[in-house]
Structures are given as structure tokens and as C-alpha cells.
Image (cartoon, rainbow, N blue to C red):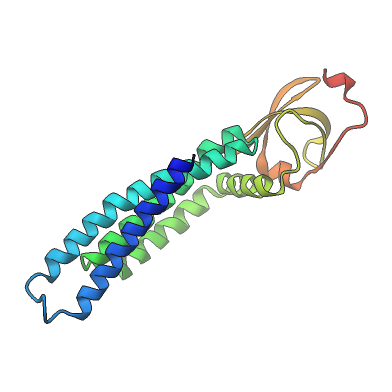
Length: 198
């Protein structure tokens, strides 16, 4: 885990240094008038390579951190989200270094984001609920809990698995998958009697 943090931070510093170098060269255009585009492309290549390494390693390190907090199945999802977000930042940075106008690109990405956000509203709600539950930590895998919700009533259950969209529980009637948004809005506590769950 420490190796991922080290590689991620080091490659991130190199990517930032390439961006700063390119911006300093832009201020001294008269010295490098013929080579300014070449410098931009080289800086973009450095940012792409080191940025991808940074996103992968930091995503893995944060995913391991989440997994170590007893959110085993959420760790992989968090790693994917952070890595994907890092890739987007790297791509935008590289495009700006080669002089591609980001205004139109950002408007297009923003419009696409709104459309996808509306289409995936329920999934996004479950994802953000998972993040809140990850921070609040009202239960852990293996805990016996009592869940009170208007939508599902009152359940005594054992937490089997937590994920980015669902929480898997075991009740007297069997195994259920409950959306994270329901778990976030439910009252969760320790039951008085767990003998029926054993």
C-alpha cells in the first residue's frame, strides 16, 4: 500500500512539474518560437504517462484504504471511480497543453454529464449514499442490526456485504439486497435479541 502512495504522489509531482514547465515556456515564447508546439506535445506526453500512473496508484491506494476499513466490496468500486476521475483530469490537462480549446469540450462533457446524470439518477443516488455510509460507518460487515424503514418495515439482520449500490443482509426469511439509499434513510441500531439470526 505504501508503494502505491509513493508511486502515485511521485508521478503526480512529475505531471504537475511538466504542466508548470510548459506554462513557463509559454511566457518565453520569443526564445523558443519555433519549438513551442514541440514543447507542448512533449509536456502533454509526460502528463499523460505520469498522470495515468498517478491515477492508477492513488486509486489503488485509496481502494485498499477503504477495504481495510471493512468495506471489502466498496474498495474496488472506490478504486475504479477515483482512477476514472484521475484519467479525466489527465486528459483535460494534456489537451490544454497542446492548445486544444477546452471551452467547447467542457460544454460537451457537461451536457453529456447532465444527460447521463438524469438517466442514472437512481444508481447515482445509491453510489453517493454508499459514500455517506462509508464515512458515517453505522455498521460493519458481520454486525447484527435492526433496520427500520417506511419502505421495508422493521428487519433484524446480519450485514453480509456492503457495496457501492447495495447492502447484502441475512434475515430469518433469507438473503436480501437493499439499496444504499434505503439504508441511508433507514434507522439502524443494535437489536435487543439476535438469537433468531444465528
